[in-house]
Amino acid sequence: MVIKLVVIVVCAAAIAVALVVIGSMAVDGVKWLATGLGDLFRRVGSSAQERPALTGADPGDEAEPADPLGQLADDLRAARARRWSRCRAIQERAEPTESHRYVQLALDGWLGDSHDGTDDPDQLRNDPAGQIALTAGLVADRVTDYPAWQLDFFDRHGVRVDLGAEVTALTTSAANVRDQIDILGEAPALLSTDDEVVDTYIAKALLLSRRLDGLVERLGALAEYQQIVASIQHRQDKREWLDRVSAIDEFENEVDAQWDRSEADRMRTAADESEMLASIYLDALAPLAKALGREH
Image (tube, rainbow, N blue to C red; front, side, top):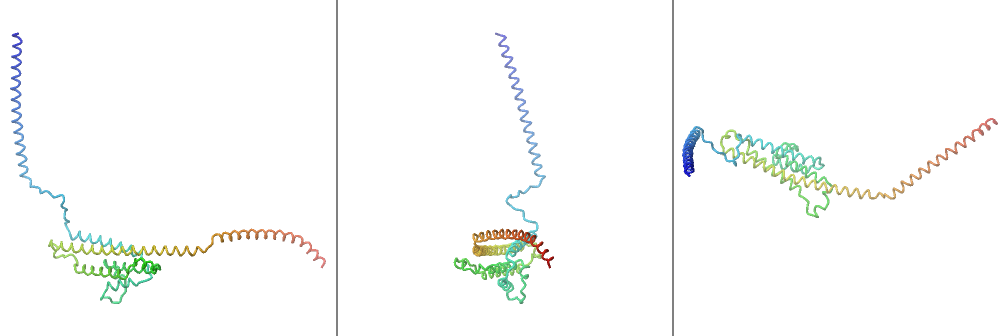
């Protein structure tokens, strides 16, 4: 009994010593951790003071071009090329035209009071806005070249477009934009450092470019109308052709063709018989001819 009591006392003492040791280690660990964190915070604070503060960029903000006028020039050049390509494609579908009435109307409207009597379409073709007026005139002339344009179909259904009014409207608008482009002029070199001047110039230039884009869209609609008239002409030509060839009776011609083949066979038979009879006749006639010759 005494031995058990001694063992219990010894175990309790050992546990107490262990707890003391563990507690001492925990206290040392906390002190070490606190010291380490303090050093870390001091280093971070020192680095923040040495480095300049970074300004965060708003992800929604777009970087402005270093040369806004140069970017504008590139955008306008691309827009001009796009409009020229579309106008050229429309012209290729419209040319050549027999009539020149509406091209002349476009020339007169484009030149206005400055018309010197020289009727050269290249005056319009070489101008970014003038090509719109020229193309409108070509399309209108092509429409009037179709015989189907004279059909009362367009009037009966109320779908005939006033080509003269459309060409005049496009030409007048194009000339108006041309005049405004002349007023705007080139990029203001002397004021290129003034943000207000540069922003205003860019806004006006882009506005006029969009205006020309709108005119090209309207021109495209006129070109689509021309294609519709062309399809009506195609259907009319097809119907007239079918009506004309319907007079050719297939059954009657088939009978005649068969009769001709029969006649050809009969003719060949007659020729063969003639050749055979002729050879027999000539063979019999030759000795007789010789005998008669001797008698004479």
